[in-house]
Image (cartoon, rainbow, N blue to C red; front, side, top):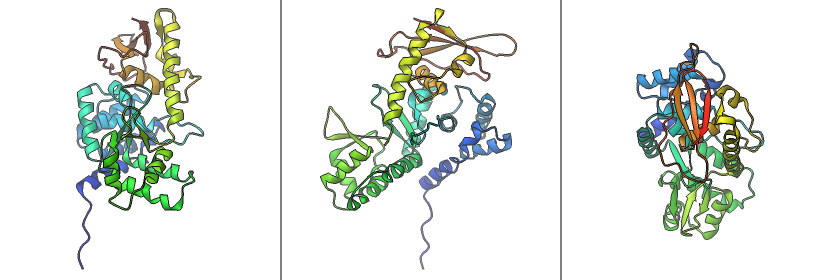
Length: 324
């Protein structure tokens, strides 16, 4: 009797990342330091675990020291929204605001994509908007949507083909029609109806400029993207109406956005990372090591020209916003 083959190194790596999923919520639930340190088991070095300790003490900090730590912390802090069933995702702009070295962020994302740990999705909310979701969360999202859709029994198999062959083989945000057919054909005969089923389920969207290309998509994310766009506009409008464009972070974080189900922290990270808000550090007395000054750009529709790096912060200081 032949021994069954053991798990590959790629499978073991994905399992180590998946094993921390249930522990992520501990970050925001005030668990003991020893329990929180157990989150370091997915880290590949003790230095990353040390950065995680800093993140624990920061609690509500906007910045972190490592890409995977930032992804896990922000996944745990993803807003819990009633009547919206979407697995947590992180915007690439949020990573840029939360990790000091943007080049390292890009390298880490490429490495994690190659290891099938996460996927990057192009969003329709802006030219440079991308969402990052762990592969295990993406598969859960697809399965959750399938339970609510009315699909012919004969078409259910295409989703297994999609999860097994397509998303594990093509790591890009988009896929060509011919490649999609080829990958799906590894498991059975593919018909145009199968592609239509995938589009209707929200896992694919056809590109407008090239109908032979598809974007990979996150099902049921539409209301979240609407809130993202409206929240950006609402927050920037609020900041630009302030006298001297200044506001304390403590008071800003308590503010609820009227037109977005996403919380203030989610939007702040996004706008800082995309360059629409610029942070500047300044001392503010004995109890606060630093404050945040934000310079608000005038127009969301105009891409910022300068790269913006977030200032590391371990307390919860003030924010000052000024229009350029």
